[in-house]
Image (cartoon, rainbow, N blue to C red; front, side, top):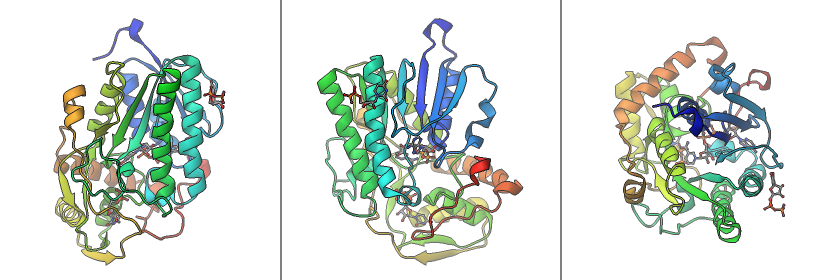
Length: 343
Ligand code: NAD
Ligand code: UDP
Ligand code: UDP
């Protein structure tokens, strides 16, 4: 339900032109807030927010969070960071800068404004976990020098910064550890497993399973995830996290491939490819904390969410300007995103 005008907030969403950020902005605008989307369009696109142009409560600012940002706001959601392995490994130094310098700048902004700030952290802080399912008090098993480290360690350092700004400056922080999330507006060429499998299946191409497909992930539908982030931001000040936000239903990658084939009727079959370096064997959130403190749990089953996502990709691929986007492979040349002018 829309909130009353007097409870309207000015909210900054960094990474707002990306997959999750654009859904978050839709939700915040629907709740009656004013939103400033801050994004450098590295992996995000203007298409994700084009439906908002002309909305008086929405504003877009092209800006890189590794540089200082001086704006006014009542709340900040810090989502800016490439999230897919192909994207964050494309320029790993920039990935770490985005996580670390970006966090410092957004925390500095929140400190000046004395406003609440939420960090989009990740299940990657658990690395290749030895504890299963993962609870927030598990410290993780992360390779500090591998190809995924720019993302994993960058996000871990960002969490450290959030907690130190909280302890040192009394800043009101919220840290969400997001597990694999999927849904409409994923980039068709970002190499993540759900988008890759659906794009391949819709083109009747072989679905690329890395390794033997026995590794597991737990997939959360985007609407559920956004609901969790907003509940966390709105939670009492003494609850700062970190808190897992994800769907605890766990599937092997092969099971996911079989589901996508069944739902699309693909004739392309499967092909096995090498497992990327440091690929986690298993991942499933323990969401007891989110249930207890936020009253949150995901509602969307994988089949239902996949159907909605397949519908999105079907219409996206039917549009001529997007048809060229291939599903990306691990170790492939750096992703060629939509032309800069089209973003
Ligand atoms: P995405 O790549 O679609 O969105 C990231 C956005 O950040 C893009 O719009 C990109 O242009 C922007 N960005 C990147 N670097 C920037 C910079 N230096 N300055 C300003 N903007 C910058 O990814 P997503 O899936 O929407 O992920 C959003 C956030 O959620 C990320 O922080 C990611 O680490 C986190 N997360 C996502 C998942 C998931 O499954 N989608 C899981 C765990 C964590
Ligand atoms: N900063 C910003 N916007 C602001 C305030 C600060 O981008 O409104 C950035 C600025 O680059 C600063 C960083 O946040 O260096 C950290 O700010 P903080 O106040 O913690 O430390 P400072 O570096 O100013 O001592
Ligand atoms: N994966 C796969 N085929 C693909 C893309 C990914 O088998 O075309 C695997 C990948 O090796 C990993 C899992 O699917 O085990 C999830 O990969 P994704 O990149 O989506 O997310 P993350 O590894 O960061 O959880």
